[in-house]
Image 1 (cartoon, helix red, strand yellow):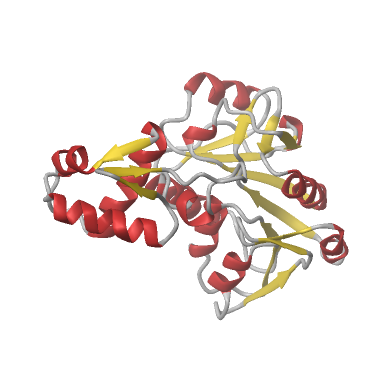
Image 2: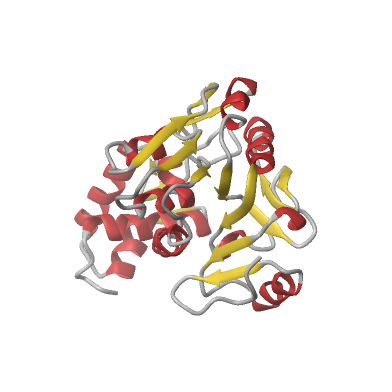
Length: 266
């Protein structure tokens, strides 16, 4: 493997391997990356410090979490390159003078990171991390919905945030998801998160899904947006072409990050 990887890049790939395999060993990682076992142990120590894994004798496993979701810091490292490309492409849809919604997903965080200086852009979000990311960006006003804090995702949920959404004419909403299917639409795992996402979806004139290829064909606990409610999908080149074509046939514009779009404007 490439010995020139920086530590954060290598650690991100370790998380990807751990997520797909369930456990990893120091020796196999050393062979995989072509670095010393000391380097790998240092990587695992750092990842454990961040709560992304649990060290075992000779390796590591995923944390044993009561919650059905992985920690935000861990999820943000999964498919990180794809999410960054998706976020950059989706941010191009955002115009000056709009009011938009960004949810608390890791891919939507990447959208926020590609919002540069604007003129009179209002971003409504239930994500503490998105709000922090946009703090101080020229021309961007950040409005937080309020509500009950969910520590696993640094998000605010509940009825207290609903009234904020009614005060704006929201042109676009950007939403990540645990799953996307032709039957269930966009799905997520936590019931509180799903309920508030439904409210946000209903408040938006256009619904934009930002989902990497690993989410296609997956179904989580409950739906928050039906296929009929989705206007755009931003994804990466590994998205299943059969499903892409079916979404396009339904009038949904599909944007493959780094390539030409498919479908017509919704």
